[in-house]
Image (tube, rainbow, N blue to C red; front, side):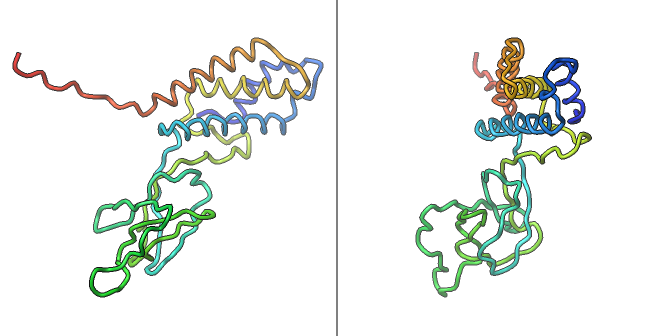
Length: 217
């Protein structure tokens, strides 16, 4: 695991602490640019939809619930499902809500929700949840990693070595820019490691495709 302290050490090694511009080196500035680089890579992962921040989480509900606040770390919802027996059945995201959902004979609201909508960080169900309980809803989502608040905090486990080096050189370039300096080698290294990081993001969930059995010859 790589801590924020280790990242800062690598940054300072490249900045050279004996240089004439102490504005490079404040802890607060380093913390800020490190987090910016981490968040940038996370956003790239979300846009690629390739699994670096891909998570599943189960939520507790109650019968009759119409809405539910989503946890703050769910940045991008992919699928919402409800528990039927021992499996999760996907719900449909409905932009227009469609027709109201009623049972065919009694006129009562259906037991299970057919659709959901996301408004202002709230999930709304149509019809309301007929059942509820622990782990009733399963949400598949993309998430930002938790912020690194202290030097002992670690990079998320899904960040590999090329991402580590991208963060270092991106941070160096951001800090240098704050004092109107540029270093060509740092910019080239940032671009190189970003390209490698993007390759890893796009390949991360590549699945092995079995070769079809060759028959008859």
